[in-house]
Length: 262
Image (cartoon, rainbow, N blue to C red; front, side):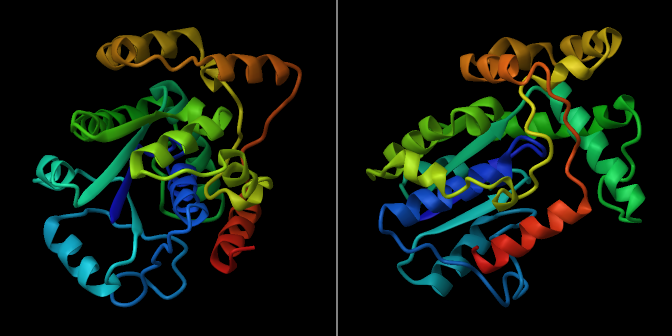
């Protein structure tokens, strides 16, 4: 089976990808990890900018009858609906409050400029994130609008992870100990691209910018409820704590742990 894990950037898409792979493993299903010619030998995930039917054909040939989880931030294959309907592909899509995505993009931008990296370095102010968010949310809606694609909210992925695992297990027709799957990620350094882990982070944004986001993405806010009960409880527990975004060292440790599966 090919399972495609799509996510808007900064929506816990990497963690969702990891939870999905671990759900397969815990269900006793071997999960393939791609190398050459698909991915570099030191790749920690089966990531592709874009996934089309031709690539799926090549991957199926390479892995034989194994299961595989693919990760992407790109647009869906042109024939995604048919692929899902036929049972050839399963998939999910992750989303987050756009205000929080923007704040996380700015954190990444600060880190990149500090370390002379180009990725996200162009994001300096909230306004810099708007065009990118327009494109990504339009892409998300294409994925989410495909029957059979499971949609997961950032706050559920991060703060009600066991429920997400149970949903993935039901989707693939497996039974697993969801708490055991989540327990695999007991250390934050095992979670790829982990930054702050703060619930309801949008409260850091000033009221003027919040108004801008709520109006610009009004349709998305109408369609999805981002403030989950679990996130509200975590936010109350975190009320007196200060949070700093992960630095380059923590990100590097995370990558190494994922590479060597430790």
